[in-house]
Image (tube, rainbow, N blue to C red):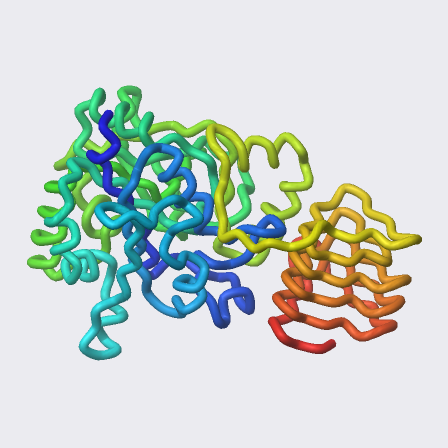
Length: 371
């Protein structure tokens, strides 16, 4: 397929978010993950690796960090004049407009869609982490004759995070779809990734808004399952749903499995992020690291076990970090112990502290805080 035929849309309007302190001053798309990445990097990289050269990010609230992270799109090779990356902020005359759904914002930015020569649109969220070939999905969409294709995953019971369940018939058509809090009995979850023709999306926007409906999935797709041919595409790679603190922690810890790391970050293509040049991590005399991800720019004088350490973290002598996530430029004081803890950017733990959480409810400290 010609790559110019596909338009990428990363939809951040009313994205599910129960990440508590982690999104107090940032949107879910820019929550740090995996020692040097942000959640949006996975969807954006999959689009780029699939040959999608024009991507629109529909921002909603708390998007200053999003603008800072994405910049011109250069780190994803999306900084070209004719195509490239477009961050579209919400258009609102008053606060009530911000409460309206994603179809309202698609309508407000309809000129963006109309100017594009793309035939197909891939619409995604940012809280789903995976590494997927969208070109293959679009080809399957065309071959199936579907009006809309929803990318699905057969998930095990107890998958961390809150996801929408779907049910398909023997022909692959979706016959039932629920909201995140429904009770549909199915092991198939919707990855909040949809493929459709651009003209169908514009028609859906117009007709739904005319009926007083403004949510893409709830109003535009779920209410039309009997009218349109909505089919499922089964994705079989690693999937992470990150919209709760417990799911963020669980998926982060999964990265310590080398098989998960290789699959998520390199198959079928690499995951790109904003580049920050840092010297290699420095391991001082007496330092110890076991089964951990440690980014560049760190100074390790103490012990790090089963943990994820972001750039520029300083672990002082005698400090012990276990089963924890320490974000950029944090510091663990001399002789301190942290276990099942998530520390946001620039959190400093003073000397001699003992801070512990549990797997299902890790202790969280907000950024720029001294404890």
